[in-house]
Image (cartoon, rainbow, N blue to C red; front, top):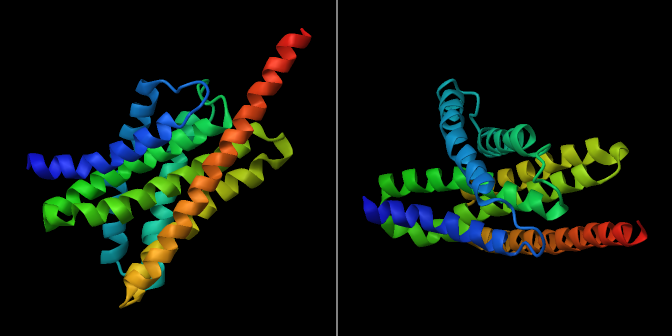
Length: 228
């Protein structure tokens, strides 16, 4: 049991630490990051219940519906909702890169519980593959969600609604595609490898851009102080 728990928790904490330590400016409070992670843990259970109901009632009777509605829509909307309610207006969400940290945190909270449950049911021998694909993909969906939430918070008010919509639609589309590859293709690995490479490329590209936006924000703040 201890081995399974360790194998289930380690990838999520490692990825969260990676994105947290890449914050080059004001470090986020560890307590708030941990709370956001716990929010991700807690939403796992209502999501799984709703997925079970959709399956039993026959609402997701195709691979497409299963991938994009049961997985993509439900999971990404719940994560987005938590970030909007608990984090978006928080005083510590004060630069664009912060969105990436909190987005990754809530996603990895969910992914960690999902990972532990899978390993308990199927065995610890799947831990490496789970770390490479499901856990890291959830982290990257969260990175993208957080990036666009950062764009929403720190752009002009007229653009805010657009970025908020994008912040949920992009992770939903990518998450749905990820699941659809698994469900629909017999030789899924040949599609999954390029998809995961693309996902990492896109996620790290947004991390770099969020750093540039954050640097720009702090340089403007320093300039204002010098003028005053």
